[in-house]
Amino acid sequence: MVTKEIADQLYETEVSVIKLDLVNQIVDRTGVSKTKAEQAVDTIFNCMKDALKANDRIELRGFGVFSVKPRKTGIGRNPRTGSEVNIPPGKAVRFKPGKDLQSL
Image: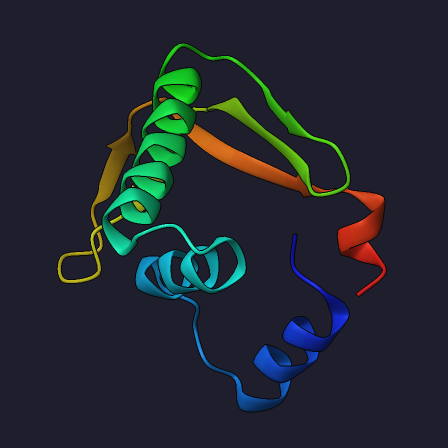
């Protein structure tokens, strides 16, 4: 879980958190090897991808909810020619932050 102190540090420095940062946090907090921590992070992300591909909802209490929403067809414009272009329907991943995350 991201503590308020870590969140404040990230906000102040405006630095992105990458996967390696998550792996290093797991190593620092649990003492497991870097290889095991990287496997854990990869496994979590792969499980989340698989669930979203299956249109499942992922609910992480205190963090938020990931869901897949259908995207409607649309009409766009080619910026070079100005001609109309059909945009096919698709799916988009949405994230709704939980109460704990909103209060940061």
